[in-house]
Length: 221
Image 1 (spheres, rainbow, N blue to C red):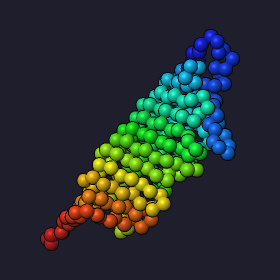
Image 2: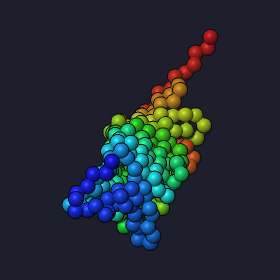
Image 3: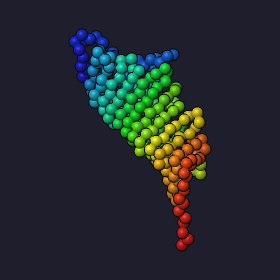
Image 4: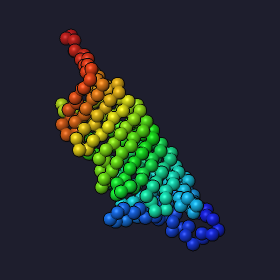
């Protein structure tokens, strides 16, 4: 179904099914399909309802509904959002996702993030909200806020679950810093501190500010 204003009969199909995402050097074509597509010439927005799917060279996504500017620089998805970048190396499941291209870089904002995976970080994360900046398809910074929980692997190869109120990722430093009631839990031990710094390359966790560790000793039978 395609709904449109009578004054724009010739442009509906082309604008609603295929739009161009402009970057400073090149352009990427995205395709949006859904049960219903509407173009609003007053706002230059394309709105989609029902079984929304977006496919492109760098990003694929699905959602219950969505909207995008006609030039593709801004996209918003709502309801059961499932998005991935770089052939699945970065994935996110959330309730709401906004993606905006600015100065050749993509800014991403996600709300109620149920699962976030990134092959570079090798961490599975969830949070109330996540904001990040991508350059050439790679996250260079990321901020997670509210009920942060991350599953990772430490230097000794053991799984660890880290929780906190907030977390910041810095690609240059190769760190993921958790702060605000930060706690790392492994079988037999619990580490708490004001800040926990997870070093991605080594899997090492460093505690800063009131560090405390509780170790459960196995009892001999």
